[in-house]
Length: 372
Image 1: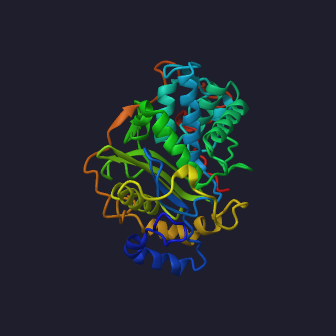
Image 2: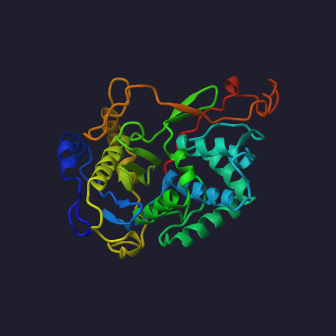
Image 3: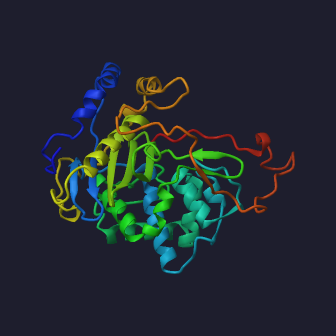
């Protein structure tokens, strides 16, 4: 794919390698929509190396948490709070659907730990707790998110919560997410390490990063993944080699492996493309039909046949099979850093027979991830 949006997708080689999987999907899902909005950009120059359907409105899912992080970083820089500020789990935060940490109301952690959990575990309860701590109220924080998005020039984005759970009126585009990713890397280089973590540990349990490129793609250093039925599998990625950093956005992939493979292909292309060719991100003109409607691919992504195809794309250990030649095995357990509650601050377990004590081993029964 050239920098011209009318050119064909850059994934010709990937498509050939995915032939068997594509045939399996087509056999099960003859009406599957294979639209994949995507873009890849050089961070320093703003050069757009490749793009396709970059202005098509899409549900951001947990990529919303990149906007949450940006607004939080701005608050830290302005002196409103610090990485050592205390984040308290409220009733509203604790009530959020999974994916979550299941912390009890009143539990406390530092903002540093909360940000690590936000990016690596993608915990919806922690996202709301951060929003309440930074904004004073959740509504105030969401208003700040939208103000920051507009200030960045994210002209086709709107957020209604800090975690990306399905909500009326929440949408973005691949182009806008690229604007956000570039801004995070340019404006807050001191926080780049949050997006490159291989995993976190709470002192009781370890959580690997959902981003399958970190530790497996040469130079990968971020950033965030997301999924709901309506959006499919989304990923914003970054990589740095020889002093050059690039970011990519892939929306609407049909599996964890597919979004990683497509992201690796885009990053590799960008890192090996000479500097200077292609339009600048801030000068990319809107294009494409149907830009007033938010795409919803729930029917294609969340049905028994699609789930069956995804399950067949895993190995015997349950790991997602990756087909890109640019992704290699890590060959070791992920390196984790601590991100958990402040010792001694977790509310005591309730005694048997009291309200809320009907939990097995005081662990709430997980709720399934919402569809849409």
